[in-house]
Image (cartoon, rainbow, N blue to C red; front, top):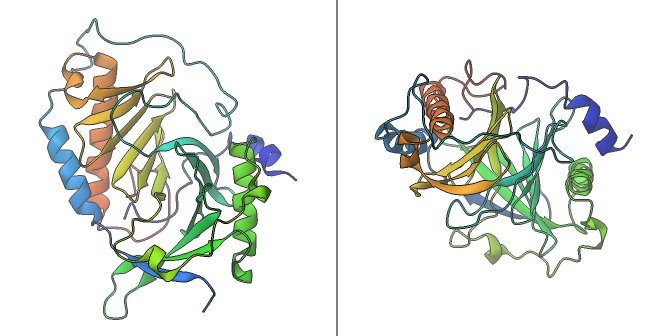
Length: 302
């Protein structure tokens, strides 16, 4: 059966069981990607949020927004879309996603058009639609310690090992579902991947590093230290460790750049940011306690 047909039925029944992994010889080109520790990033974000004065639930504010979120083809089937940023804010984030973790994983499209999948075995794949190359990322243990790291290999859509046949096929299906206008079969690789293209001085593609679903939201962390929280009412907060502003989707579906300090004047925005803070605190407290599995973020770390 097609992915789109199956997705509509399974994502509406998917609940907290999602997002595996802790929020904690082939022809491809390999690379070890350095990364900030989860605790370091969470600490930094919580320091910024800790300076804010949130509006209490009993307070009122004339600045709070109201209205009904309009539906889209992905609303109601586990995915969402919103208008692009209108000014400076987090530069790369997930614009559409679909939860198919009952069988395969989370498929998503970034706002730059790139398409990726976070598979249930915690491997990841991300396709550069401009070059036809994709990166395949898996967690590996260092020989000298129990520490794990992201090991990345790059291929193109015409040349990859047999072991990736199923995952590349799924990537194609997710891409066709999330972006019907994308003709992935006609993406011609611009050139063969070279060893220098994944050197330590070359930036990697942005991808969803970890994710989890809670009763109230889906939380995704990118490998560029961006956290994205999409609430069940389709409001959304995207924040990064190095920016004072966040990307915020309100209840009318409009994406805006908001200063974090707006929590002092906007009740609805304040309630969303307060929940983000609570989630990050939970993740920080659990970041060293789990090493795998998925589930409710109130019980396990991402």
